[in-house]
Structure formats: structure tokens, C-alpha cells
Length: 303
Figure 1 (tube, rainbow, N blue to C red):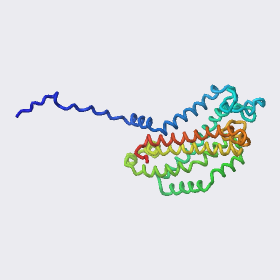
Figure 2: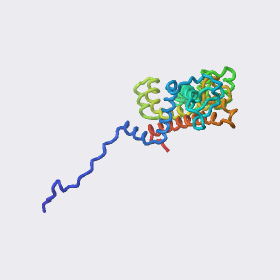
Figure 3: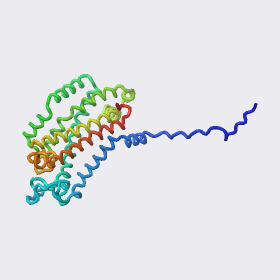
Figure 4: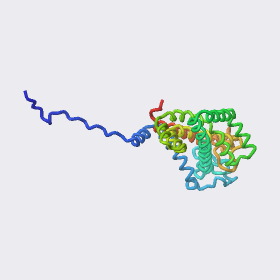
């Protein structure tokens, strides 16, 4: 018996989906990650406010007016002239909040960069070489962990003054331990990979191996720790400013704004609530952004 089936009678196969490139897959994961999107949007808003602060307000954050002091925000019965109200010296609250975003971001980024350079260098060297180098770095980490960050920062700032440079330097020199611990462990794992052994056999230089083979493969860990320490530095700066040992007045700082409003907590709670909420959302956005970047760039390591 002959087969009389024609091509038209054959079942039609659905076209297969074209495989995604790594870049397309990463963008798709990023757009579907709610935490990453939330953190990115809030960070973009805060960065935009910090950059374009002179265009977003007509008031100088340092300008005082005793005739306009303690005006409430619009949502509490104030006027649109000062839509977030004024503080005890008549300074526009929105202007100080917008310019204060610059201080918080600057301190957070610079402190995280300084601590990241120190901690990442020590961690990668300890994980790659091991032996005595690892023992020395581990000893330094233990010494650092034995030092309470807040107390040491308070002592140093009280001794040398509360300028912006001093605060950034102190925080940068005190927050490197987490970088060292995490990157030491990550480097030990990468050190055992075949491509590192191949680079050593081919005679690659030590800087080339560390920068080209080790660093890119521990970058996911570095991103997460950088965001955590950036948020940590912002919180510590706010705490120091609240205690009067951080950024000194009249520089606009969210921690300093909370400190200046604490005496009026029972009468004008918005003086603390507004900068407190801004600080809360900034730190939350930084943490969610870092966690989201880690999930997107290394989805196999997600819990």
C-alpha cells in the first residue's frame, strides 16, 4: 500500500522561540524584578533632586528669615510659598531637604569607595595567596571587628572636628571589613577555577590575573557589599550629625535636620518626620537596588 499523505496533510510545527542573548536575558530579569525597579526609581529620583536642586527650589538653603519661621507644610495647613514649611530659623525646608540629598549621597558614595578599595584589595590578596598573607589580613580583619564603629567614629570626629572631609575619611577607614571578608571567601573559590590555572601556566602577570580573571568573577559580591556599606555610611553620618559630631551647621544634612527638630517633636513632629522618611526611603532603595543587581547578574545564586 502506498502512502498518499501530501505535505499539506502534515501537522504544522510551531516556530521555536529565538534564544535570548545574555544581555537580553539580563534586561528581562531586571524588568521583572520588583525590588530592583523600586530601588532604581527611588535612587533616580533622589539623584535627580540632588543634581537639579538649584532648579527645583528658588530658596537658598542657608537663607534665614525670622518672620517666616516654623511655617507648617502645605498638607498641614501651610501655604504654597513654602510647601514643606520652614524650620526654626525660617529656612525653607524643601530647599534644605533637596540640598541635603547631595550631602547624604556624597558621604555614602565616597565612604563606600574608600572602604571598598581597602577591603577589596586585602580580601582578594588574602584569597589568592593564602598562607601568611591570609593570616595577616585575617588578623587585620579581627582587629577592625574588635573596634566599635560608632564609638571610634565619635572619638575621632570629636578630636578632629566634624567637617565633611573628616566624616568621609573616618567612615571610609572603618567600613572595609565586610569587603575583605566576603571577597576573601569569593576569591578562594575563584582561585581554584581552571581559567586561573591556565592564565598562570601561560605566564600571565599577577596584576593581569587579579584584574582580568579574579575581579570580574567577584564583582557581583562587590556590588552587593558596596550598596550595603553605602547605606551604612549614610546611616552613620545621620547618627553623627544627630549627635552634633557629624556635618556641622548650617550645612544641610538630613541627620542634622532631624537633630534640629528634636526639641519640637511634641509640637511640630513634621520637622523630624520629613527628613526621617526621606532617609528611610533612600537607605531602603539602596539596599533593594544592590540586592536586585545581585539577583539579575547572578540568578543561579538566588535563594
